[in-house]
Length: 91
Image (tube, rainbow, N blue to C red; front, side):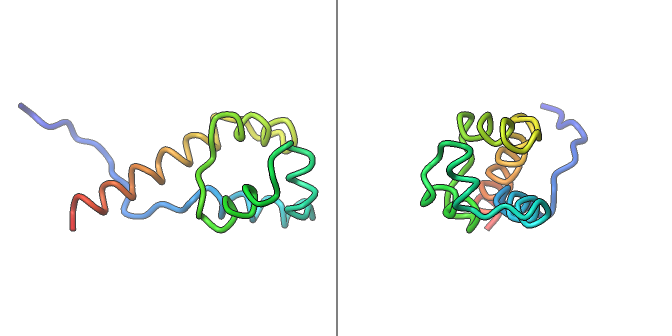
């Protein structure tokens, strides 16, 4: 089987880091963001800390509040998850 040339990231950041930056940019506290998205504050804080993943439902609620497409958040999560798996495999 021939392997295609494909680009694999050397590093990936949890989407919670991007979310943290965005919330700071618009001066929105995690508590208020949780209320606006309808997600538990505990869950939002876990995402911001990189301890929890962004689900499709969460991504849609983020889109409604931030105007950033759900697909953006889901792609960030997917890339991060893929990176973590590759790190485990390559150890």
